[in-house]
Length: 205
Image (tube, rainbow, N blue to C red; front, side, top):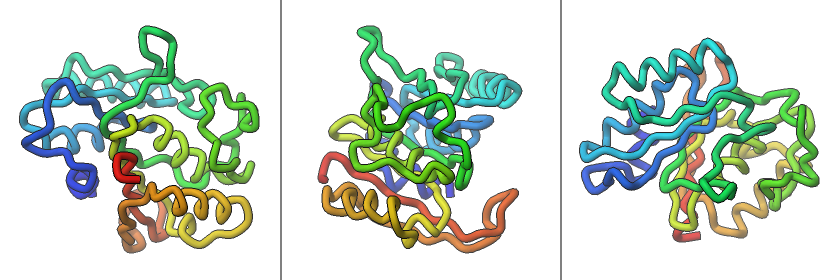
C-alpha cells in the first residue's frame, strides 16, 4: 500500500531533493520511509506525530534509514499543526501522504473548527464525533497549489451522509479527487473494516 501511495502521488526518479513530502500522522515513520524509497534522488521529509514514544521512534527511524535531516514535529496535527514556515505562514508541500487513525471521536478537542486560524474547513466542518474528513481537509490544505496527496480512510467516507456528504460534494465539484482506490477488509493492523485511498490532485483540480 505504501508503494502504491508513493506512485499515485507521483514520487519517482524525477522527484528531486528540493521537493517536499509531508505526513501529518506519521506514526513511527514507516509510510514516509517507504514512500521516499521511490524517489532515488531524494526528497525533503516532514512529519508530525502526537504520541511521544512513537514520535521518538519516528525520529530514530529517520536517522537509521539515512534521513537525519527529516523534520518530525510532535503534537496534535489537528489542534496544533507545526507546519509553519519562517514567516509564520501555514507551510505547504509538494506531496502529502497519510494513514490517520480511523474515525477519531474527539478531533475537535482544543480547536474551534468554525474559526480555524488555518482555514482548513472551507469545504465544511466534519461531524464532531468523526474526524476522518478533518484529516482529509488538513491534508488538502497542506498541499501546494501544484501538490499531490493520498490518504487512507475507512470506506465509509465514500458513502456517509449529512455533513460528510456536503463536504464530499464540495470536493468533487472542485475537482480535487484524482481517483479512489478501494481496499479489502483486514488489511490494516487493529481494524478489520475495508478502507480506501483517496488520491488528491490540486494542480489539475
